Picture 1 (spheres, rainbow, N blue to C red):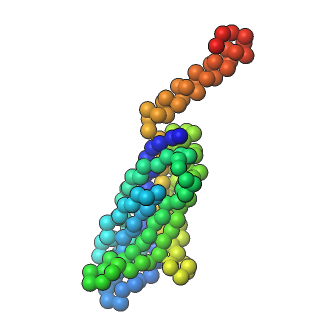
Picture 2 (cartoon, rainbow, N blue to C red):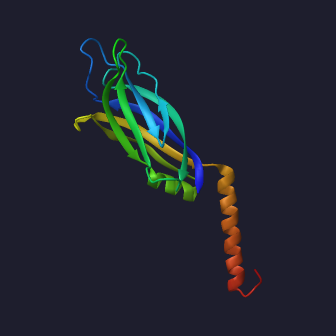
Amino acid sequence: MATGTMEVLLVNAKGLGDTDFIGDMDPYVVLQYKGQERKSIVARAGQGSNPSWNEKFNFRAEYPGSGNNFKLNLKILDKDTFSADDFIGQATIYVEDLLALGAENGAAQLHPRKYSVISADQTYRGEIQVGVTFTIKVYIYILITFFLQRLKMREQSLEDGGKA
C-alpha cells in the first residue's frame, strides 16, 4: 500500500451564475476526500460568478487503501451574512487512476483542467478549474524500490543457477 499526499490546486471557476439579488455572490469551495474536509477562502468581492482562488490543499491518501471511493468532491457555496450559505453546485473528480500511477511511479499529476459544476437539480452551473498531484512518502517509495530490486536480483540468481 502506498501512502502519501494528494495536493489539490483550486484555480478558479467560470459562469457559476449569480445567486444574490443584491450585489455579487461570494463563492467558496468545500473540498472533501474520504472523511477529510478543507474549505477555501471566500473569493474577493466583485468576482461574483467568475471567482479565482489559486489555493492549495493537502489530503492524506492511500492506494489501494480501504474502500474504493476515490472521489474528490468540490462543493461550491455562496457565503451569506444574514442567512444560510447558498449551494451553487458541485463537481466530482475521480482520482483512483492518479493514485495508482503515483503509487507505481512515486508521483503523478493531473494538470489543472475544467470540470463541470452541477446544481442540486442536475443542471449545468459553469465550470471549476482544478489540478491534483499525488506524491507518496519518499521513505516508503525508497523502501519498496529497494525490495523490488532485491527480489529481481534474487530471481535472476535463481535463473542463473546460483544461490538465493
